[in-house]
Image (cartoon, rainbow, N blue to C red; front, side, top):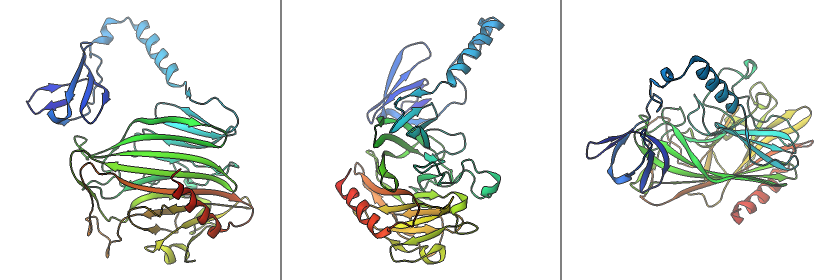
Amino acid sequence: MFTKKSGDVVAGIVLAETGQSVKLALANGTVARIAQRDIQSRQTLKTSAMPPTFGAILQPQQVADLIAYLQNQKTKPQTVTPKTTGFAFTQQKDRVTLRLDGRKITEYLLDHPQLTRRAFINVHTHTGIQVTRNYPPMPNDGGDHPVMHPGIWMSFGHLDGQDYWRLKAKVLHDGFVDKPKAGKGRASFAVRNRYLTSDGNSEICREINRIEFRRHEIGLLLLWDSTFQNDKRDFYFGDQEESGLAIRVATPLNVQGGTGTIINDRGEKNGAGTWGRLMRWIDYSGKINKRQIGLMIVPAADNPRPCWSHSRDYGVLVANPFPKQPKERREPYVKTWVKKGQPFRIRYAVLIHDTIKAIDHAKEFRDLQRILAEGW
């Protein structure tokens, strides 16, 4: 439902939206366009667009037939890439599933009733070993942050006064910029995300998030490219510690109670040694089934500023691209402003490694740095 600056109210289903206008399908079967400059506020209605008396028109058997038909359609995934070798995507309404050589690698959540931001969940290595915590967590995964810590995600504890990390405001999937595309050695897609205020009536900014997976000689490579922009006004990122690209490792890889170790480019280790420190790369890994399993994060050298690590022994690791607060608090000490119409871009490489022996971090860092510099 849109309330216009003139006071008029228009309700319908959003068919398309650009920076200039919103295209709506109205209940009477017509289509309306509303200029963005004329919109005072917008809200999502809790009731269906279907008339409330529609069920009275149908016979009981017709209602039962309709429900049975709709339930059957819901269970049929849309196959985007039907290949059985190499990468392949399958897509459903609320998620995109990625497979490699027929083995599920991860799922990307487009929508979720509790997790109101986008994320990769249940990430596996190329050999099928799970490298991020179960989502939702199992009893042996511990009870901390069962919804907020999915698998691999990007979020912000303070973005123009809104808290997306703690799910106080919603990030809305607004369609694919580039549809899922998969081949023998690579898979990619790009999405548009809208960062809404906590009441859902306003928009802080929009993100174009480009994702690419590649085969790698020691596992899988995830390339992450996010650009944030608002063409109507300035906005800012706060310096809250829970901000940036984040991972929650599989419980067996935890430093605390598992086989894991956190290490950065200076050789500092675990939460006590790495938390709050600037880093060029950081790795969280350990042993599962006699194999060395982990995730190595490399921020791009051309990011607006170097990253520091919010790293915890219970399994979370965040590469934070904003200043570190002198003392933790929700309100920012430093605001990173983004001017109206200007892009703010941050990029990362994540190496999902799975080997018999420990990896050569220095070598992998040089290779990943080169890939990021090429712009992929």
